[in-house]
Image (cartoon, rainbow, N blue to C red; front, side, top):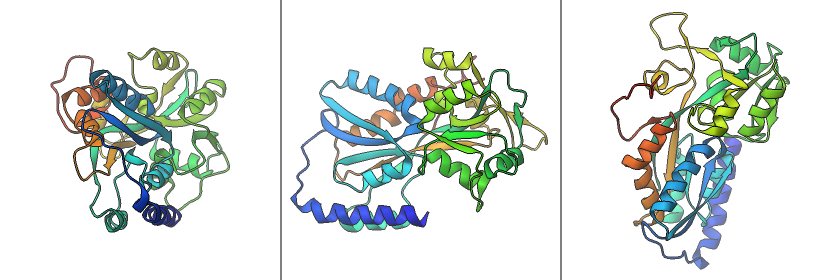
Length: 300
């Protein structure tokens, strides 16, 4: 974490050195061009959001780059990136550094809730995992092969380290794939391994691509640590996430760098209001800004 903080601070300093000669193009809440950076594990849902937003506001162009979380925060410290979408908001020291160079404090908040799905081959023998089981696999005490997205600090890797690995190092049995899609392909071809991906890559039963994945892989059951009933295990879903029954749930945060209404604010409003929140819900995630009446089949 200290390394990540140093990179963020260095990026802010570079931003300050060059910002005096940089004039940002004018934009409004529904037209113009801006760049955003998105944690790679959120790509499927943000692609859906952008598709609808661009159709609604044809004069707006939001150019999204998908990368590791640490790279998103490095981008946020540059003049060119207006918004980032990650698994966390700005830390206090990051807020202070940004404020000192920008003259205002960026805003952040939670848009929706996702989860880390434990994915296994359709015919895998082991499909039920306690938190200790997962910890032992990730630290190498259990040599079972595991794979996750990225060699750098992606949001999922950071979350799993904080939740399961703690102060230990990842085991030599943990492989790094080039993105979530590669994790899924690896599990398809290696039935004895387990993988870790964002639920929004494998949980949508309407998306043809994800339905194809579901024909070859499945989500494992994970121990509920907050349940009164001991020995309760669940898969990630809208229901288990919203009721605190799935232990590997994580938020989708926005971080926005605007001190006046611009296209970043327009996109944030879209994500936070009914249409954007319905898109999160339709993708089987849990909206954080609005609650909706449950329809049969949507929260199972």
